[in-house]
Image 1: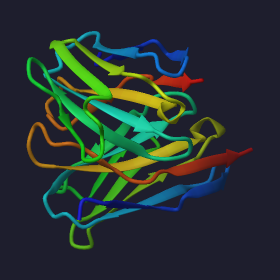
Image 2: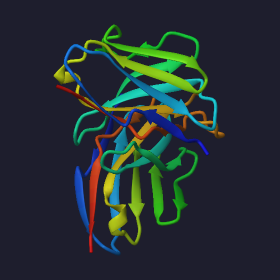
Image 3: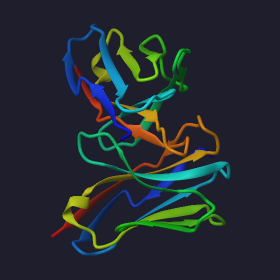
Image 4: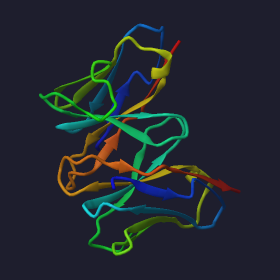
Length: 117
Length: 113
């Protein structure tokens, strides 16, 4: 149980295009999902917290107009990188608040490797 | 105050040995302390977690030791195996259902045969 999927797992795009990444909780309802960015050999950097049916809360320094987050249902959140540039190339990981007895528990997706040429 | 400091940055352990990773925090509001294991190109996976009302939690070869007064916690991997080679992140979050998790900087563990 508590499986989170991401799609696509890997995407290569041209500079200036937009890319959408999907995050799904497969066997539980997730009222809260989180989006992280991870640079090579670095820790996870929280980008935003996404609550179903409301606007995402972005961390300081994260451009909300560039990284559009939508949490349309209890099992799906999407991250759209708009007008992507090479500096947006990174590993993007989502997580979902788990269904278990502890509300702190997060389950992570497998990540999406974005490469912007 | 939100930081979680993790050490060492990298660790090489002989197969069968004990791997020890340490973390320290400042925020006394932290109430939940998970450890995550991450393999290259994959998302982190929850390994084991502890709350401050206990000083130790063991699951198989993995043990968390927690020192509330020192605000430190550590992960011990007993009988380390090459398959344990991965990056390990400690983390912490405050009490409350919707609090974000603060991650440590990560430790790259290599278990050599």
